[in-house]
Structures are given as structure tokens and as C-alpha cells.
Image (cartoon, rainbow over all chains, first blue to last red; front, side, top):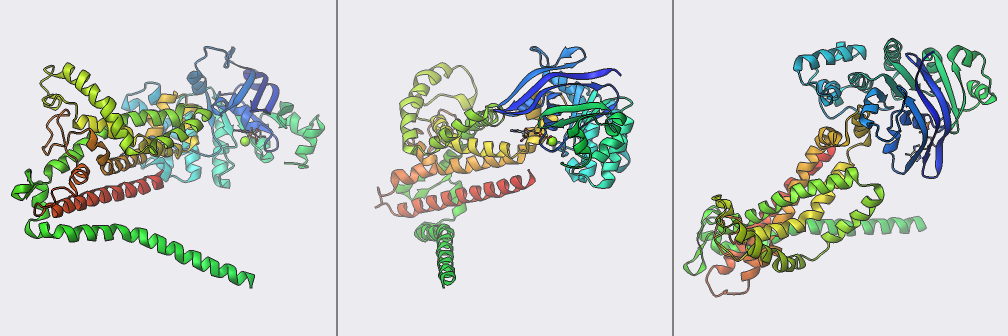
Length: 251
Length: 307
Ligand SMILES: Nc1ncnc2c1ncn2[C@@H]1O[C@H](COP(=O)(O)OP(=O)(O)O)[C@@H](O)[C@H]1O
Ligand SMILES: [Mg+2]
């Protein structure tokens, strides 16, 4: 198994409180990794520190390294916009940009200098298809994105994220605010997308982790407790915390 | 029994507040009615429309043209906005988007403090610094340099609509900056993050997402600032020169409506109709400011709903 991104002794603190503590873990390439654990255990913090979004929080401190493409993304001189382009994040709640459906998807490519209308048209269609939204919006591309339902908005955000062609796709509980049908749609897209992308998925729904993940990382109170290939992890958890969590003794 | 007393107190408080609110709402039409009553002797003879568009202000001959004052008001206010809006946009963007929380927390009270400085102090500051700056530096350097009429410096004194505009701009900074800051803060953090997560730079995010989302609010803040500025033009009577003419250049003297009223009320009252003319001026001012403030409120409400 090849590693796409790896954290080394990663510690993140908000003020004096450590949200993740000394996390060292490798994420496999072109597979789906699920990060699981009870609420508040640092899953989001870990995910957001893999794409340098965590540093936007006021008063946050970060130690350790994150190796991506054989470079530390926290090294001085690294272009943070380049890191964020190559490692995309899909947030828990969809935040459509204040523009049309079309412009939402074209937003990233435009930033990277694609101006030609035909190229943009093609890209927008391709990514909306990849996100499974094309058929629903092809006749209303110029409507404001906020007019979509929340499930459609989340798929739009997926298309928007894919349009900058990231190598890694981070997903933070992306289905937690969605209805079952929308959840199913997103899940099936993710399974298709792992052909091309390495996906790291935070979830607190064990069913989703079992269903989607090739690899599982279990966190508890900011610490990495156990990680391993999905089948092994679920069939044969080694740590007693993991066993208790899988047995539903705490959430 | 105790419950009963609490209910009675509740009722009393309710009626007191109702009376207070009713009184303050009724105040505007009451003032307008009083002004209209005193203005009627003039308005019976000449229509408001004719007065508004007549250029000659010559009370001894019974000619009361308000146009120079209305135009003067809008000159000073317009200049103030031209100066204030770009600067306020930059400061508000910095405060809301770039400044660390701690700095932001200490700057905001300072801005509110600025809003509390009495306007006469700003007027004095204008006489002490802005007027001499124009007279000694700007006008000598600009005169003869361009043929642009707006920059013609035929009046070398420095007492001009530009001085008024600068002083007024500084006066409306706080209200525009705080309104803009509120508008920017109302933009959800998640959409900034969505843009940054795609690899947009901070400035690209502000330009492409934050300003776009905030644009109705920005317009509202500007209109709001404008309506405040019109009402405050009295404070600049110390620096605008007070000549009843239509300014042609930013260095010409002007005469805003509030300055007209403040300078002349109580004097020369023996001139027939003078009193009625000033009342008409006050009525016009009240209506203009009222309409602008109302418009600004409506736009602001609309904007806040769409954000
Ligand atoms: N912006 C923040 N400021 C302060 N503390 C935070 C912030 N975000 C998260 N935390 C704290 O860090 C810990 C981990 O949070 P988080 O990473 O969101 O966990 P999870 O995603 O697993 O629910 C929690 O204790 C939470 O209270
Ligand atoms: Mg979370």
C-alpha cells in the first residue's frame, strides 16, 4: 500500500487545550480511509490540519509535520494555496458561494487561470456529472446555488472541490446534515471517486465507515488509538477502547 | 397576590414604553407640521418647487432661492462620501478580515469613541489643519496646473467645499466603518473557508466571495453614511466659506442648508418672509434627511435578510 499523506507527531492545541496529541499515521493512496471516534475527539482538527485550514482558527498552535509528496506542508516557504488546492476539503455543512451553480464549479478553475468559456463549460459538466448532480441542474445552471436543496448543495460543493483537481479529498462528516437518499448518493459517488482520488473521511456513523472504508483510524480524546485495514480493524480490534467503541458502549 | 402585583407592574411598564415609542414616532410629523406652519407665509406666495430651483438668494428683494444651499449640501456630502467610502472600505476590510481578534477587540471601542466626539471639535480641527493645508499647500500647487474646472482654484482662502468634505468625511468614518464591519462579520465564516479550501488566496476570497456576498450591505452602509452626512453638514459651516453660490470647483466656497439656518436664525428677522424662508429651509432639510434615512434603513433591512 502506497502512502499519499502522512502525519508525524502532529499536535494541535487551541489555546492551552490540546485537540490532537502527537498523532503519527499514514493514509493510503487511492483508497477511502475513515477516521472514527466519539464527538470532540479531534477528528475534524486532524482533518483540517492535513490541508492547513486549521491555522485559520484564532490562537491555534501546531507542532509536528505533515508529509505530502515527500515534502512537509508546514515547512517554511511552502505555498499554502498550492497545498489547499492539491488537498481539498469538503465541509460538514455545504456552503455554496454567493453565485450561480455554474460559477460555483467554475470558481476554482477560474482562480487557476482557465478563462476560455468552452473549457469551463466542459469542466463544469464533467465535475457535476462526477458529483452526480448534472441531470438535476443542467437546465438551471445560472440559478443561484442557494436555491438548491441541502443535499444538492452538498453535491455541488463536491463538484466544486473536484474542479480544482485535488489529489486528496478530505470529507468532514459530509453526510451528517443530509437525508438518507442524499447520503446514499454521496456515498456512491465517493466509492467511484476513489479510483482517482485518495479520500479521507471523518464519520461518526459506524455503518458508513464499515460500508465505505478500506482503512480505518480510531481516535479517542485527541489520541490515535488504533488504525488498520478495514476488515481487520472491524473483525479483530486490538485495543480495548476500540472494542468498547465498536460495541456501542460510548459515542 | 404577588403574581397580581407583578402583572400590574408589567402592564404599567408596557404602557410607559408604548407612550415613549409613540411619542418618539409622533415627533417627526409634529416637527414637520410646526415648521410647515411657520413656513406657510412664504409657501402661500411661492411654490416649493420654484423655491427649490431658484438660484437667487436675495432676502431684501424677497427672493429666496434654495438651489445654492441644496447644491452646496450635496457638494459637501458628495465629496465627503468620495473621500470616506474608499478609506472606510479599506479599514473595515482590514478590521473584519485581516486583524487578529485581539486587535479588532481594541480597535472597535476606539472607533465608537470617535463617533462620540462633538461635531464642533471636528469643525475647529478643520479650521486649524484642513483649511491651512489647502490654502498653503494644495491650492498653490494645483493652481494653473490643470484645466479641469473641478480643480480650479479661484478662491485661495481654503474655506471651501473640499475642506467641508474632508471634515465631514472624518466625522462619518465611525458610522460607516462600524456598519461595514457588521456587514462583513455577518458573512458566514464557512464560505470564506470554502473558498480558501479551493486554494484561493485571502484577497481572492475577499474579492470574489466576501465582497460579493456583502454587496447589498455595503450599498446600505454607504447610503446610511450619506444620510448621516447630510444631517451633519452644520458642523462644517466653520470651514466651507458660507457663500450663497453654486460651487463650480472643489475649492469654491459653498453654503449647506443647515449652515444657512444656523447662521441666520434670529438675525435680520425684520426682513419680511425671512423667518418663513428659514423655516422652509429647515422643512426641506428635514424631509431630505428623513427620506434618505428611511431609504437607508429599508436597504439595510433588505440586505441583512439576503445575507
Ligand atoms: N475553534 C476551536 N476553538 C477551541 N477549541 C476547539 C475548536 N475547535 C475544536 N475545539 C476543541 O478541540 C477538540 C476536538 O474538536 P474536533 O476536532 O472538532 O473534534 P471532532 O471533530 O472529533 O468532534 C474538542 O474538545 C473541541 O472542543
Ligand atoms: Mg467534527
